Image 1 (tube, rainbow, N blue to C red):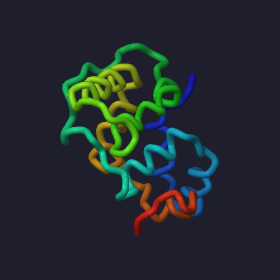
Image 2 (cartoon, rainbow, N blue to C red; image 1 turned 90 degrees about the vertical axis):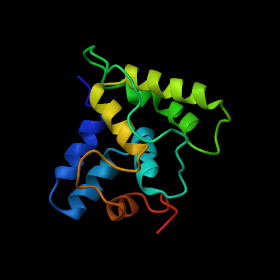
Image 3 (tube, helix red, strand yellow; image 1 turned 60 degrees about the vertical axis):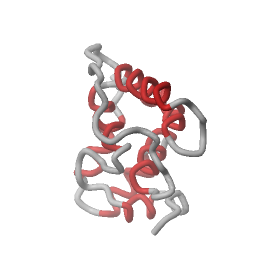
Image 4 (cartoon, rainbow, N blue to C red; image 1 turned 120 degrees about the horizontal axis):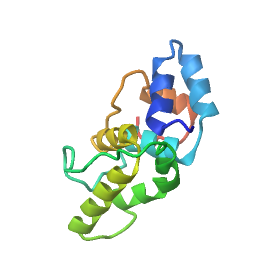
Length: 138
């Protein structure tokens, strides 16, 4: 069984030392991890979705932990500067994505668009040290 992106980041956040967190971020480096962390910490990333959680039905199927990894490229549809879509279409696509992924990953996506992580322990300093040059601000 695969681990959800939420669970990977949550485990990293629970590590005690900065070096452990940085090493764990590097060991789990992937497109989806980078997109999530940029979405939270990079001020140049502007979300084109309304604030708050949209009305969606969490996925009740088992073994959906890998879906976000496979669908991570869709995240660019929700960020300024990548795809010019009508607002209603963009919001519907986001709801569809939330309903496809593991419920914890849906919670993660909703928090990320608010520029937060749904758990503590990972800071911009950890991300900058793990992935130099990825975050453009600060």
